[in-house]
Image (cartoon, rainbow, N blue to C red; front, side, top):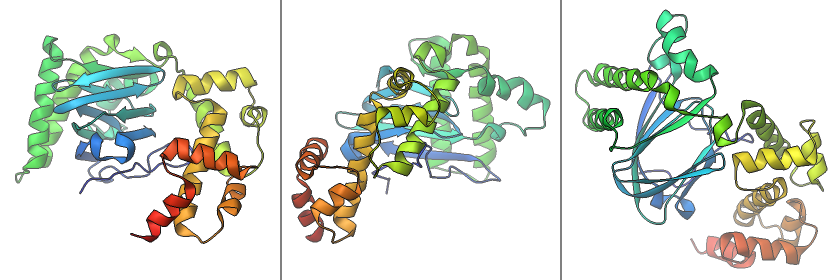
Length: 297
């Protein structure tokens, strides 16, 4: 049974481990339409990710750029890049995640020559379309890889490793075509600042905090704070703050017997009516109805 919500820490790093220390590779078969709100929300991970779309239409957001991927398309997402997947309905996306040392150990010449350029050059992502010959080959290799993972034979780990190495060879040879952090509007400095500000928000969300407070947490101006958020997610710092507060309130309504007024205050809202209005706009249900629906489960 697939997950319906992605779990992240205060910096939006995904909390789920992918693979193991001895075999840092994981295959997933997922339908974005089965996630809450048909969305795999903003997150990042240290692993590289390769995604194919086999059914439906997928919207992939990276920085301030949105891509529409249809069946037969795919995407490579680099380590540490914040991204989100959305769908209007069904969007089946078999995908693999693997650590940089899955292909070769860190203290090897192969790692230095073929892996480090992806980790240090600002490469962000690359959309794969079957209309381009080499990309079609990569997508075909990914289909074979998914088949190996779905029907593992006695040497499936070796087969998976071989295919990943073949795919990586193509990606490396065409790496100069890839989008970088800069041309998606996100620099590594901006992303680090963004992660720092989200940490501050999630550690202080119940307090009365302002845009100036959020910006000061990483030593930047209010204007720069707004720019960093706009480049990373389509939310302002205050919108992100309110969204996080509402997520905490959602859980408290189900997990505690506190009054709605108390929960509103505990999650940083000074006005219960304002809290009610934002909650209904975000979740399409009132706080009271949400609590009652949980009791009836």
